[in-house]
Length: 139
Image (tube, rainbow, N blue to C red; front, side):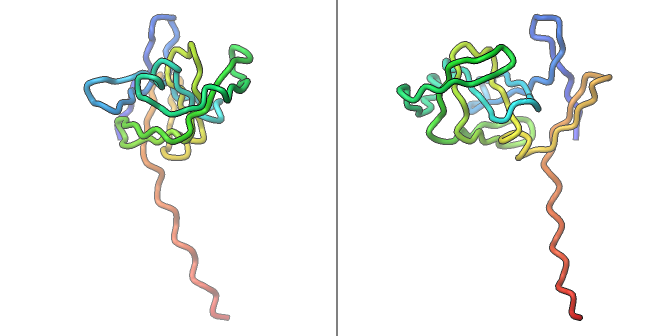
């Protein structure tokens, strides 16, 4: 599996950003966030993708920048990345979020991420297959 370099998107801090897309001609920036329980999508992108959500169901979320208003998609969003399909399960939708946020419930459940912080590289690969169950003990 190849290593991918962290990227600096203008704030001087290299981070593990991952391109996501529905249409390969239009790629979106996401950040791999091991501290996030769930994935979140900017409201502008959710609207562009026609992601269904109930605007009357506003919730208060908490992030590194403090509390914020958010909604949740009423279904899954199927995207593509360099490793294959990535499904965001009922992601949060946040107005003003600068990039798609890939949280543990989705990205880390579907793929194995390896980070090399010293070299500013990351790898994404499918999880290894689960070992077969042991046969029953005949005794």
